[in-house]
Image (cartoon, rainbow, N blue to C red; front, side, top):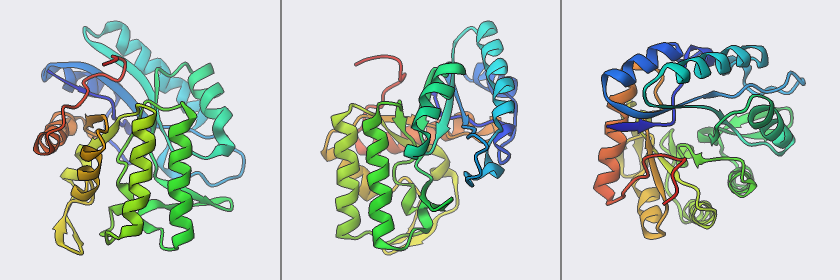
Length: 262
């Protein structure tokens, strides 16, 4: 049996498969809980929130209907979610539109970018120290908002082979401290383990998860969840297994369901 709360459909424009395709894959491999977390829509307000990688507000209606229909017919737990970046300008949108009107069961914090004017800088491409600190401040603010159920790929900023520094370690420690304080799970991401290796200062490594980050998380007693971050139905089980294997190597006992309290 396995669970997964990080699943993307064709609506995010860089994934494959429908809700029904993923449900079929989950059934064939004894899934006990499946959560859909396609990239959330944002309002059409003239700000560039990367519309090329997410559904539109109108498509969100179909997404919700598809997931709810599948849930009514599934013989295991199936949940409706959205993966969201955090920007304080959209705090009401997350709460009132996604969790309110669309009645999402959960929201995932996906710290992909930091705002810069009316645009956004992808986290692994952040170069300026000031911007890096603002990025981590934003992630911590999101954790403290109470809007999210877990933090996806919290070490994504390392994905392009970024060097580990004392300053970066301090930022990660602050992020982990916030997650522990708010009892928010950090995700070991199976997709990062499935991607091509990158060259770091210590040689070849996974883009994420990054060992040094998870060593700190282990020391601080962070709660961990393992997810596939599946972008194809056939990757659902394989990516979860990769994430679970990584967690086992660090001695983590990952939570199985974000809706169960331990």
